[in-house]
Length: 352
Image (cartoon, rainbow, N blue to C red; front, side, top):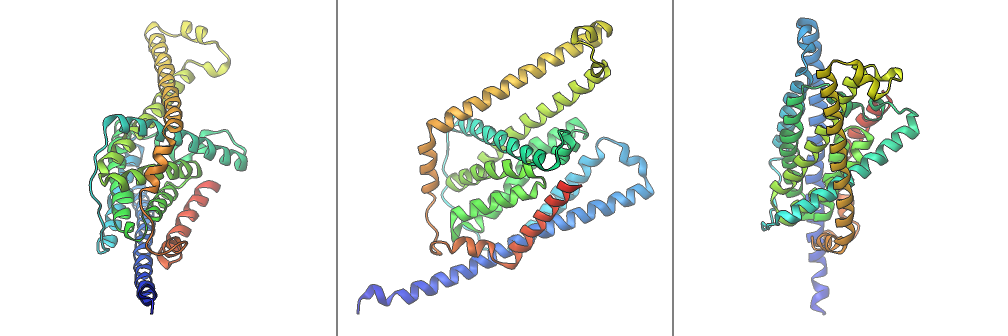
């Protein structure tokens, strides 16, 4: 008898064992993220109601919403994910370094992808709700501009990049890459995108999540995706704060009544007019910086597309067999519950 044929049942048995292990791992991770979202939302609503009844004056502080998000969404929620998932087997690869030039190139590319994803998401929102109001197109991110600016920068520039990369990249991929690295990267990006809760954030988080996941799977150093994430968030948050401040000052100058910029500046006190003029220069300069990032990202992406395709193909194939990895990753109770729950939250945010 052919020796290779005699080993076929053993190979199939081993693959069956891997598929069972994969379904268990993905199911437990799905349950972890479902519990995170459910418990965090319930706790935030319960505590907010208690504060409203007992000390409503606290809700007037600009740090209130940010503090609630930090404590329950990032603190309690991510702690629950860690506790539920910590018993799963972990697979780590050899650590590899990349240079600062490549990191800057990836930053430009991911920023370009984020802009494209945001535009597509806003287009979808507009096509459905027929509104150009920022609060309708992106209600969650718009509401964050009402946070305390310093707290918002700390949360978006430090807390979010560190905790989200640890949870959605390191924790998730380390516990699923053994069953197929590509599936692990795609599922981590999908869940991370849905976790943001709105359509346009889902699309751009999905795109850059694929880049972050591939970067971590190739280098096994989470600090690289943390730095990219922090850079993207800092640029986006700074731009939002600048525009919000500039728009508010324009409204105070009664620009909405059809007064020209020169007329508005002339009608203001010299100090206020000078501040508004400097802010307008700052906004224009920041927009030019953003445009430069986008153009550079496009150039890098076109120039090095074969290199990036090689990086993806070099991740390795799944040991579960063709077409069976994603079945194991998605068709299990925990992941189905997670995906349906996250989609339900997104739909709720979309229609309310």
